[in-house]
Length: 556
Image 1: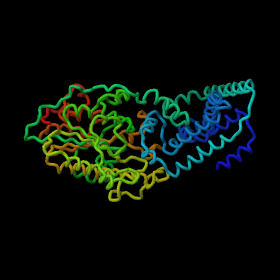
Image 2: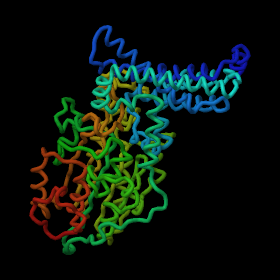
Image 3: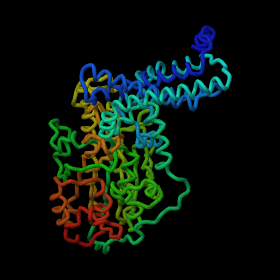
Image 4: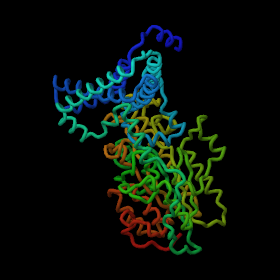
């Protein structure tokens, strides 16, 4: 390939910087933004020839806009470097926009910043490799070999001014003619700017670093320093053991417990669970939802910077006397568990449940919970809160999120290049992952049922949902304001042992009465602390699901 580029360089005559800019502008504006123009075509208020003229005007507007920017920043000494960077950024952002229906936003940049190598590997496919070669590497190789001729500075400046003036004239004229239409479209569809590459990635990255990037070395802010438990239990009363499962990428509409036509919850349906059918997430990505749900801040007031260096739910439970442990089968706790025990999978469990690439099936959590409980000294009567973080239904490799005995729906999409699968195959793979989650959750509940030492509680709540092609969108991470219900409507359920129910009968009745009420991840922080018998002034009764319950009996 290098020889080909060298031969190409010898055959191409030198061109002016203006012509070089035009070539780059046409590639950025047209080749990398087909999905953007397709979206515009669907939103155009016109039909027939007028619709075609409106679409052509949009293409010209983008070309003129990018031409102005390149004339300002491109000079002979840096043009190839900047053009290569723009093609690189634009090429990859265009892949996610066109192939996965993603909208590039600060949230998506945050997801990328907090992704690990395993998550990035899951996005790699043959389609991605081919795209990288033909729409990123090859164009960069070609423009790097185009010779740019020297021009006298006065002549070059004059040409740049003429290009800029001409582009502004075109912009002014077209925006004047179609201003009302553009204003209406972009006002109602603010996500459109997240589809235009490469400006979407550049603008979102700048916004992320300006407003969301974690500040370094900020002092830890104490929170809930008055936290304490209610009166200790009598010697005859068992200590509490609460298991909180943080799900991954599970959407409520795919749970048969919520009315889905397919039986995706065959095992949970046989257990005495309290299922909450109308629960919304704090965000559309793990990097937002997990810190938010543990922060004590409701979604409308959530401050990422403050959450990153303030104590949260787990700190408060620990201060109140609970032994708090986080067991992770995902990409970490996003800061929520930094000051509590983080239990690591022993080698024998990794050998049993993990692949060579390090990914582990969620059944490792069942064995881990059993092993963890078995390892608690007999004389240890401390109450405990254990958080299990699932791999769940993390995409796009849904087919890897279940094992053969829990794949009832066929044919499935057995690739991470989900764009090449039919909608039916994709849904089958996703639903199989929900069936597997059903198996894992029921296994965890059975593990708690079998333990005689504790009065046990179980709470499952997914971090966010997932799009599987609905509205042309895949995966998750859409801006919350425009995110479809598939990404924000999440499953939530609880289970309690007979001993817990006996000690807290009124709480059980209160929770059961809220099964069909509008709830959210905002309810987790105050409600879980209340279930644990923890009292603090930071518990907001507005979001406490137990606020209408009579005081529970004294307990740990």
